[in-house]
Length: 456
Image (cartoon, rainbow, N blue to C red; front, side, top):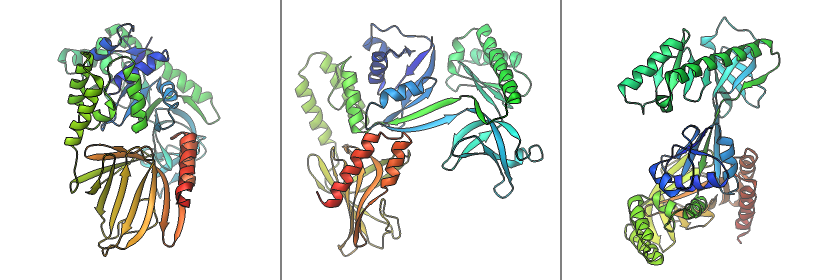
């Protein structure tokens, strides 16, 4: 059996979620072993989970990605981005386009596939079937390749490739052994990309994996030769990016607290550069020191390290599409749970969310409140006249010591240009239909937008 390897600041919470739902965990860290003494862990894994670089979510990659995504879907505020790569298709060539220098391939999907024409000129014709593999998905098309990758437990077999070993493998003897096995078993023109787990396998096991992948490739080619209709011949690898807003971090806190002492706002504090002091405080909790007092002391400590009025402050607006807009300004007003930030705008810059551009001297006042579901923004001219007001609908706003974080749901209420309107209502519905956000979150956001439009 194979399980799921979990790493990062959410590892205790995610391990608790997985084991509660009878999913197996593999290669646990020492911390997880100590936190789950009754769990029997596996040695092999086919799926990995690790943090985003900014710790505001997790990346899930492997064969059990879909199962894990479904577990997270019960949280209405979970935001997902999905990447499918490695799917193998029997496609049909639609068009050889010399203008864009691409081959257009019909995959039976909403988006067409694209192959670089320079690699195939003179070898293909319109109407022919073609064996292609999905590399990645772009906004308006799928990027394809005929350089086939075959995914195994400890390796990827690559056509027209060369042998490469995971960067985490530094042992010279292991590198030489894996290289030798590839040379002995690979056909001409093929290479192997080894995962770090290959180091723990015997020569015979790795040789068998390579031979089994070639057998599967032979079956694939036979299926392609017989096939006439467009179809998926093999599924590839799914990668899911799950972003955690403030409410999701609180849910992760609850899961973690089921197995070990957990400070209030544990995961939020971990993403706010207080990791070491959180670990120290939770060691005190283990010693049965008063929890209420520790939480109060932590709150006071964070406040002492937080930005004050006149300090610069950063706003991270994460988009549903995976992009993050970073902006900064000066704090002009601050209370326990709210801020007002003044941001000067470049002449001609586009105002996010509304159909306006700035003029020389314009500035923006952004009001943020902890747990609020929108940010209020007021646009002023150089002579302090208010030109527009708009609200960006978000997930609960998270105010950190020197930055604020939220997921902007691409829904705006605009009071500008002598009219009031809701912008992008159709777009947020599309996000829900694509499974990027929950339908409940979309519906509640639209309901809130209509209230704000009425001034309620």
